Image 1 (cartoon, rainbow, N blue to C red):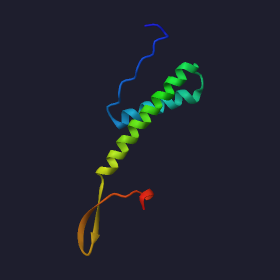
Image 2 (tube, rainbow, N blue to C red; image 1 turned 90 degrees about the vertical axis):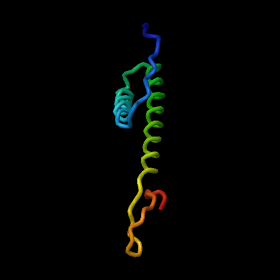
Image 3 (tube, rainbow, N blue to C red; image 1 turned 45 degrees about the vertical axis):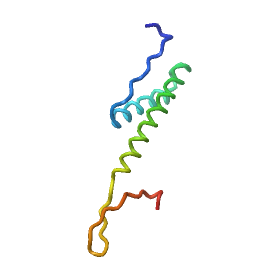
Length: 85
């Protein structure tokens, strides 16, 4: 394969895998030693990874429920983060 061909990264299979790769991408970009074309590809990959992670976090938040005691009874309530209060 020649240096001009770009390799498409595979879709991460887990949140942890995506975060690990995202951290590596950010580190590469922060070093500032990659050619412009590669930096643009890394930036695009980082955006895709961030979108993937945000989706996983949104899904996880929807799955979390809180047990709240009301009038002596335990009831399930949807989780509300600080932004929703």
